Every structure is written in structure tokens, then in C-alpha cells.
Amino acid sequence: MAVTEHKTEGAPAVTPAGWQPKIVAFCCNWCSYAGADLAGTSRLAYPPTVRIIRVPCSGRISPRFVIRAFQRGADGVLVAGCHPGDCHYSTGNYYARRRFLLARRFIEYLGIEPERFWVKWISGSEGSKFAQVMREMTEAVTALGPNRKVREAE
Amino acid sequence: MSATTGNLQQELAQLAEAVRARAVELLSSGEVSLVIGHQRPWIGSEAIPAFVKASERAADLVVGPQCAAVLAGYLMDEAGQGTKVAVIARGCDALGVRRLIADRRIAEEDVHLIGLPCLGRIDPVKLGAAADLEPGETVDFEIGSGGLRLRRAGDEGFTDGPQLSEVLADSCLVCDVRKPEGCDELLGEELSGLMAAATAPPVRTMAEWEAEVEELASRSPDDRYTFWAEQFTACIRCFACRNGCPACSCRVCSLDSYQPKWLGHPTELPEQFMFHFIRATDVAGRCVACGECARVCPANLPLMYLNLKLMHDIRSLFGVDRPHVPQEIEPLGKFESDDPEEFM
View (cartoon, rainbow over the protein chains, first blue to last red):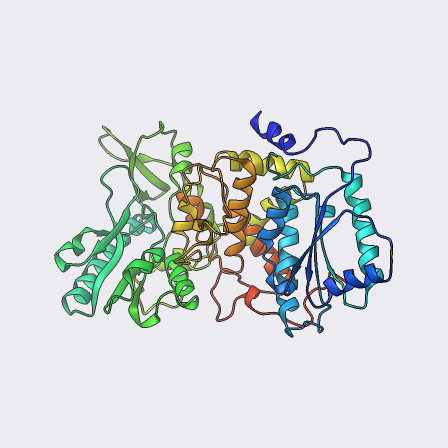
């Protein structure tokens, strides 16, 4: 039936050997992007699966960005921002927290595996946490294989 | 007809008379320039929206379970023209109007809400199934002693049909505002049968309805995805759910924008997911649970299952008791520093 055909259209039906996931990370400029930077300058090893998109604040991220990332070929999506209380704009991450508490449940409800969509607070001094999150996420998404849901044909 | 329910049909007629009289008063005194209500349809049995500008047309106004559309959305075009607009408001209409006022789409002083006790709206799909109607067949009904009484085309008189609660729309089954809240005036307070019906507990609780959502949420991710993919495949992207919604009221909609372009080829499944995701999440925390999106859907998609899931989570995560009732600041427009923390 058309539905099942669609599910496999955007990605290979069988996971190729040596396949690595594509992970899109929306990182806020002030904390998480700096954290990723620190992971790099500290020469911490983490899998080269992540594509970082820098945004001014986690409050800038609309839940629809997550669906768009999956549409365009992401196998996993991370939203990362400052810890509560640390937002450069004082409160942006508090709004983001409410929004993504809902959005995570909703994305899951539509059938996307919860392991594919993560939200994490990563501060500018947490280079090691950034590397750790990327390792854990890559492992979880690799175990699931390529994402086929809501993914556009290439 | 027995005394109790026979009265309901009579009381509805009395209520309709009161509505017409009030409309004449408001129009002829010049207090309002327009009364939005319902009128008999040209075809079918669902009453359609009526826009009454002259008092002699007030006789067209009808009330009752055949009144279909939620009227709030029309105020986006009709309010703010310099004169007041009156709306014949059931609970859902009133919630929708308050939604538009809270969202600063219309001004409170531009609207006059005439509240009515409501028995709920008949869902024509359910009525068709319960009364074994042919597709497209229409039927007249009245509220009799043992439930609805129906008269098919060509029938002499009315015969017994299903209970009203069997054929009410899903959103009406759980409605807790059948006696509307926040209106400028309330008609029908002397009609004891109607008021009793409107203030009785809902046929079922919101929690019972949400249990259906919970059942869906408890399936495996692949099953859930297949469920929604099958639903969304039927969507013809007519945007009726967006256009009828009192919460989805941006004058310039991001779904119509070319840059950034959020929606592409209409029938691709990824686009369908995007559309329904955006529609549901953009009204999260502001949905008034009127069910208009599901009512107007030509594919009969269970759109309230999307809204309900969000409402359920808003209630459980943020402790909002009645998420469908408009507040000054909505749950997603504010925060508490001790909101649940899952992202450490």
C-alpha cells in the first residue's frame, strides 16, 4: 500500500554496512554552541555524525524545525540550549522548555521514535557533556538505523 | 410525547423565538449592525451560518442541535468595522470569541455575545450510521420523548430514532460549557428543561475521551506512524481545519508563505505530516476544544486526537485545569522556574 512504499522511499530499506547517522543539532549561540566549540578546542573525540545549526537561543527553535530536519534527511535531531537560569536573554530557555516538553511527546505520538529526538541543556563550559551527548545519541540512533519516517524522497 | 422531553422541542422553539426577538431589538435599535447565527440550509439537514443585517431577516434564525458551524471565526472578517456585531453563542462559540479577544484579533467592545443553553450538535456521520441513512440522504428530526424522532423524505410523520447522546459530536459529549460562559446576556434561563440539560454533567468526561488518545499513544512507534500516515494520506489539504479554527487566526499564515516555504507538493506524505504538525502545535495551549477542525474536515480525519494529546499533556505537565478555556496568558506564553525538568 502507498503508505508503506512511502516509508522506505527516502532512505534505503536495508541499513548499508558502515552506515553512520546524520544528526542535526540546533545549538544556542551562547551556551551549547560554545560547548561544542570547547569540545573541539579541548580535542575531545566524538562521532562526526553531527551537523550543527547555530541559533540565537533555544527559544528561537520552533518544533516544526525538528520535523523539517527529519524531512530533509536527518536520522536524529538534538535541540540544545543553556541551563535554566543561564539564558543570555534571561528566559528564552524557560519558554523552550515548556514548548519541547510538549513537542517531544507530540513527535513521539506521531510515531517517530523518541530516541531520535533529544533536548539537552549544555553550557559553554560543558565541552565534555557535548561530546558525551553526541556519543550517546549516535549510539542510540545507529541502533535504530536510518530514519524513514516523514522523510522526503531524495 | 411525554412531558419532560416533549418540552425540549417546545422549549427550543421558544428559545428560537426569543433569539429572533432579541435580534430584531438589537438591529432595529442600531445597537448592532449584524447578527451572526444559524439558518435553515438549502439542502441537507445541518443549519448553516446566517448573517442577519436587517431586522426583517431575523425570522430566518434557528437554534438547536442541527446548528453546525462554530461561528467565532467569522468575526475575523466582520468585527472591527466600527459597529458592533452580535453572535448567537453556544458555549463553543463563546469560547472561540473569547479566544479571538485574548489573542487581540478582535476587540471585546466590537462584539455582543447572546448566550444560549445548548444540547450539543448532531454529528451527521453518527446520525447516518445510527439511523441507517443512505450516503447523502437527509432527514428531519425533532427531540422526542425517547430520544430523537426522525422523518425521512417521503415519510408522513416522525418515527423514533436514536438517543441524542448517540449522535452528538465527540466534542459535544465532553462539553462543560453547554451553558455558555462569559456572554453579555443569556437567553432561555426560564426554560427549565433546556437549562437542566445544559447544566447536567457531560455525557462523558474529558478524561474518558483522552483515554482513546492514551490507547493510541501506548502503541509501538511504527503502529502510531502507520495510523497517522493512513489518516494523513486521506487529507486533501483544503485548509478547512485551519480556516474554521478560532485559535488559528493569523491574518498572514506561515503555511501560505513562499519564503520560507513550509509546505510543498500537496499529496506527499512528509508534507502532510508537516502540515498537521504545524496546524496542531500552533494552536497548542489555545485550542478551545470546539471540534470545528474535525467537523469541517472533508476526509473526516480525527483531528481532535492531535489537539487532545496536546491538551492532555498541558494539563498533566503544567497543571492547567481546563486548557480549553482562554486565559490572559496561555500555558505556552509563560513558564514557571520549577516546570518539569527532563533535559538535564
